[in-house]
Image 1: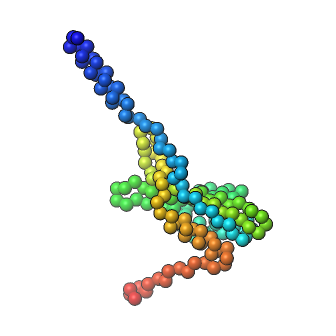
Image 2: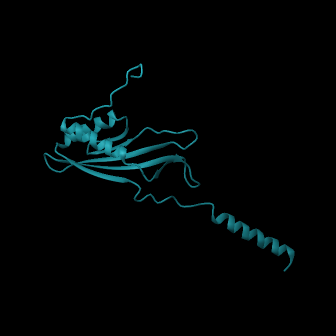
Image 3: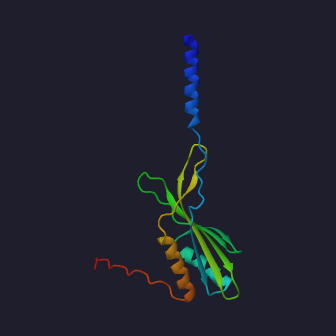
Length: 161
């Protein structure tokens, strides 16, 4: 085999190997969300208003408020040094069970801001490892509906005592 053909064959093999690993499909995020359900003894309207006020009180950014019962809210995006920005996305559905009971369902997923080879810069879902924020949200909603807000932590005096 002449030298020219060997060089062409080697270049074709290298090109095929190089192009095989460049692009990849988007990550399958099925099952990444933490799902929690709660049923409260309150009307749909009272529950909807309570969920809205609790989200505001806890500092979430409410992106969608659908009067049919859906909220999409985000925690503050934060970054530590050079790490990608992160936030938690909450999708909250409020459904009327009957006149006196309402069901609340929360899907929470951790998101990071970034870009992959086949996407534009955007928020990408990742598995939520810590469910404390979701539990805190449910406790606050239950406390508001029951009429007992959770006690706030006492503030320290300015002199440190």
